[in-house]
Length: 149
Image (cartoon, rainbow, N blue to C red; front, side, top):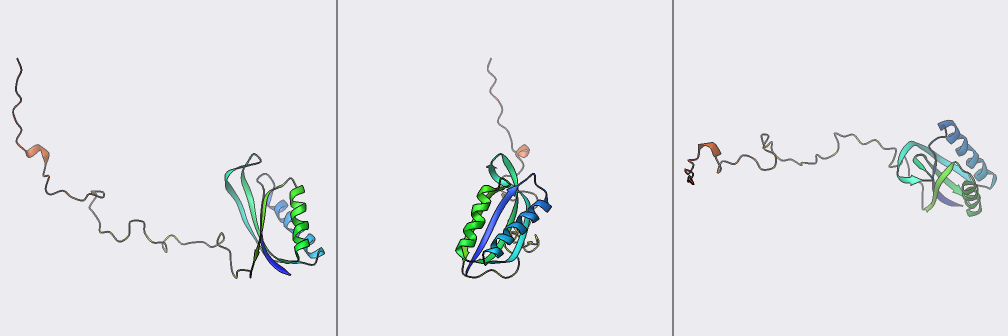
């Protein structure tokens, strides 16, 4: 049997319990056709980059599948029929990843590198720093204006 990662997007107006019911339904289809489902990750309700079928958000779900190709084709056929499924994608993989997927990993903000690097504090002068060559403009002598009569 081949290994697959399967992601599907469900409509925003269904409840999380209905999303879980969809997962169980598709698990049943796979198991009835000789496959099995490993890890299931519910990524939750996320904003879409662009509208899909008049939806701005969707429930994202990832399933690790170990099944023959006809079982995967049957699941995809049923997803095309179901109105609650906006999109789906199945990818064949060499092996399933261990641990949480990239979407589920929480990155601690303190571990990320700072955007400004290791620059020294510039004392509130922005990127330019102090300008000792310019001095205060009010201290310079001014040329008298020529009065035009």
